[in-house]
Image 1: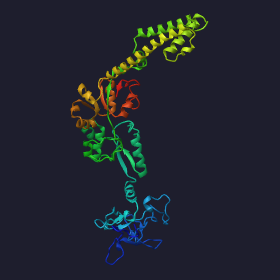
Image 2 (image 1 turned 60 degrees about the vertical axis):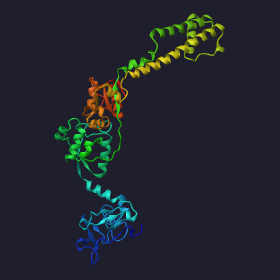
Image 3 (image 1 turned 180 degrees about the horizontal axis):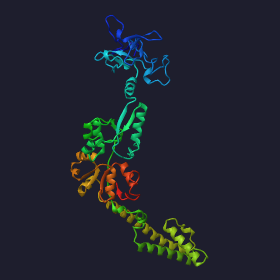
Image 4 (image 1 turned 180 degrees about the vertical axis):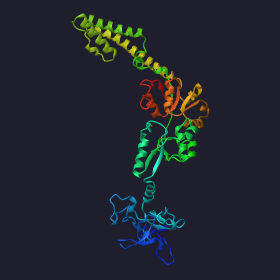
Length: 436
């Protein structure tokens, strides 16, 4: 941008005193070196021409952030130390980004990295310095896997907690966990998350751990971080047709009646015996011939039988041809019946979507915090929504015979269906009849 900065925002002599120079109340002589200094609010010796009239890396040799006491640059110095900048006029005389200086606050100075073609790393670093060493009061609204786990007397865990603690550790902030106030819990008895938001709004907490939905009610109370994840909801219903593990394992036999399965087994046995009788199994005993004949028949039934040229007799070819026709009819019928069975099984779930749930007139379990959102999008469903304070209570209600309809995020449904933590308290099979 040039030594004097960008033409739309040039570097200036910041003091503009009639007699020139700098204000005398800002100057002092540094002991030991005898050099003249500007006295900033941090008591640091700044050069007398600090930030004046030109783009320069003014901070590169300044202690304590960028250099040691002898002015030698630190190897781990912050990024702003190597960036040129200068003091500029405030708007409207500067059309580029600038910030008010905190070093000499009573003089209303403004500085700009942009006019020198540099990136402003100093302003974020200044914010970090104001937070370093502070103690933040935090609330833990509850468990919502995998985002946050309330571990009682132990510190909370979960990936949102890990991320927040990583940032606090880098900045140098200490976190103090505090209980959510009784007043906020009374105001929001169905949502500990909304109660925690209220504590932040009242100044009782500095922040709350967890993944929060930005509901209209909460946005009125306080500010949130930028959105880092969107969340869809799915309708989950109970279905008796899903059955237990044994029913699932034996469902492949349902398309045929026991009598029909018996007839197929008997036909296979008869064909195997006939194959031995006409000599297709070779000159072997009855038992051995029956085994070989049944084996040929079973392979033909499964479609993996020998070719016609491998048969020894015309009777054997005729017999297996007839049995092949029977096998084809059996496989076709089985496939059609199995498809019909699976379709009927799916239909027995009953409700397929939210419109179907509304038509059924049954209650739909949902978290209290999302009631207003769903009611706004689907006004006709509002009277059916049954609010709960957390996912655990919805799971408990389902096990006790309630909550046959529920609206859950996919990840919560997956954890519940698998009886994974935190839904592992009711046993492995407690949620097997849930259907998405």
